[in-house]
Length: 580
Image (cartoon, rainbow, N blue to C red):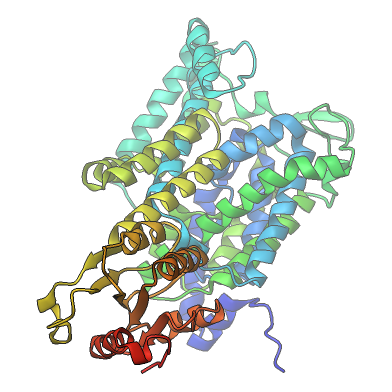
């Protein structure tokens, strides 16, 4: 008996089989340097967006980015914090603090590993496009709204419990608008939108942040107030507070040793794990969808093929180890992975190099990050939110999609914005499943066969009726399809039903067919099922419906069905069941 091993190092093994030399290494080094530079400000901005200090985003890239590339199943995926997680992680941080967030991430990593071991890597194929598009567009709207506070330098009265309260708080805080923050935001947004058209080879967000930092220094010299990363965040070293982020590597620490929402270490209990289980499961599902979708996009750009189960296990390992070193939730990012491919990446080495670039930035450039204006980081996230919401795709889908798919998309979008993504995806999947069931049931029908349908039906006696059922007989269609057979016509002694176009039965259909047989027995009417597939006939046999008081027969085709019907009508064979 052979035992299948977990698909670890799938991408690396695929790379080695394809061959690896100095030319490929140069491509990986160049791509890793490019993507690493892109990842630094994004990682800090996304960490701030989920309610933790910016260095935790860098730690995420450093640990999860390298481990996922090493153990995962995609050669080109680049892992780190992503905007899609903001709507899930921010409430966890607010309720359970940093310790709760990291513990929840660790639990999500375990779930991802289990999914990979269960070979659930094809999960993405079962998520309808309107559901994915709806909740990603909703996430983009929520992220964009969250950035308004730092874009304009507003002073909010307090945290909001829902999206509508958040909008109300922003409206009432407009009188506190700061000129310096607003000016930096406008300039950075202009650079982010215009620069890629002029110089696409140099990442526009780096130029925008540099311009924002220089403008911030100028405004400070003019004594115009401006919120910076160094003013908002600090770290303690030898009992002395320093602005910005620490210029040293993270230390190992258990998540429950870190402070919760009350500032005290987490009290580990079954109740805590119970409360974190739902968001951990949501994080794992979203992480699986994002990473697998990212791998599919990368495959389309390169012609490669990823290992979905290996990718899930790699993502799980990264999300289990990263929290032990201060890293938050991570998954593959489509924008960074696409940039990785365009920059010449060949293997997971590029993603490992990108993590190394972040390591160098932490050690040598940390003091410079203190000068970054919060408005500049908010402008960066605003553009990220706009891109991830895919307004063109949403508009195109609303214009051409069936009304049922439009309903699913809008429901997911609205629920994501007003409530949360977990509810939106759950309801969206239920709606999509309901739409699918309705469409499949519409394909199943029962119709009377005219005499000229088949030569075998010619000259049938008046007390023999012929029907045909087309389509799958399952719980959504069985009652509708079989109800036609229960409309008795006076004088009918035998009913022929062509089921050659019925690919499957479920238990609801079997139970409904059994009820039809009971009614026929009461009316002394025989039933001939013509052309059942081997699978359907096996299902009926297992249900004990091979022979029912000489009343039911299975035959190969319509000629045999006619012969069986005529044989039943003669008094000599009326009580005998002879299967042709």
